[in-house]
Length: 85
Image (tube, rainbow, N blue to C red):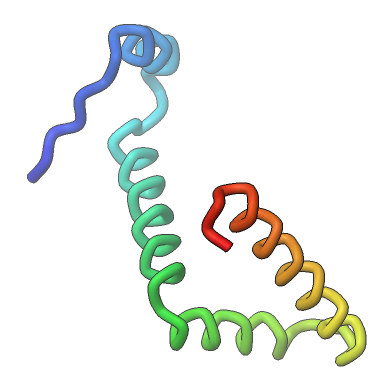
């Protein structure tokens, strides 16, 4: 199992809260990041997540299309700023 190395500053901050299960906090953060990375790589997972969200959404189709345009524009702008597009 990998061992995490923390800065002394972070170790001191953690010691301020001994009642917190920091291993569990780290595990949950790692799980969330791993899911985020899998999601960014998998179009199928993105589609499933969006469908699950949409099934419980009260957005109209028009609202969803408008939101999609905003997301696309934001991604395009970010790529341009990074010199990718």
